[in-house]
Image 1 (cartoon, rainbow, N blue to C red):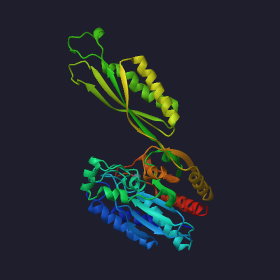
Image 2: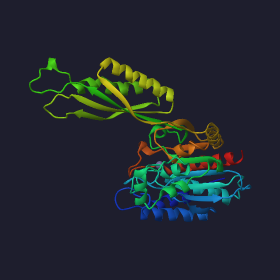
Image 3: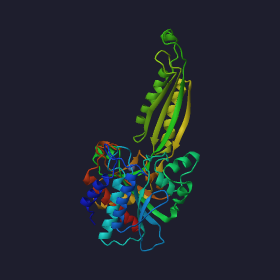
Length: 397
Ligand SMILES: [Zn+2]
């Protein structure tokens, strides 16, 4: 079964025309431009033989019944919303690639066992005109959104009610598998010249604030020997986060991206410094070890309080789905590697409730969320080939 890569390319370039003015692509959820883009995708879905509907929050869903209507569905999904001045491949490769898969199956008179669905999720990027949070559509579908007062107000700005969020919920038992094809948005596949990444999971994110205490005093009159400079004291910690991430594990990343120096004046010795530490990793044990080592450094320095401000747990992809993707690669003689994802995707939310898989294709120079974002056509072709074969393997289970 061969996909039509020229047709897919044409669709990608056609969809890119639905963009607000300015550099790159700007198609923010709930806007007029987004709705036009969704209508374009909906027509393509209908043309591929899918029956379409839009759910209560704005997820576009297409479906083809299988031999048995009561079986759970195999879903291909991603998103077509963008960041402001983003690229034309983030998300769209998954949605339009999914349509190409369905179209190819239809052209080859493939009669699917399970119902097949294609979903274009709304506001994956979290760039809607109101703050409703990223991966909004998939979180709503998996029942992962608690509507509080703030969210209720923000929902109104995009014409949604709390009830719309609740109505978008779907029983995970109606879904056999979720599969997403996405650009890597990093540079590992590009650097290693490997066309396919089989994602093992989406890393968790842990954030801490370390408050380092010193003593503020006049910067002109306090001699160097008599200082207790909080900023200076924080240096081993900042360097330590970087060292620990490099030493401990290949996939662990650690960043100090923000420091707040108090009182923050040229003529005052820093009396207090807040250092924000972020760690991302797939395995909780590695995170625990990293935190233990950070605490060692803190104990050595003294005068530091460490507070956790965020803990987003990793989302693991299903082992069996990973294996089927691997088989798909092998059957097509396409090189692949297993890898974690450092960025969040709709697959992160779906994987919390449904056996899911995520396939990566390379991003040139690792660039994404910028107008220069590019995935070579040949890489897209191989990605869609693997998606097609994986769907067939999952459908035969
Ligand atoms: Zn994306």
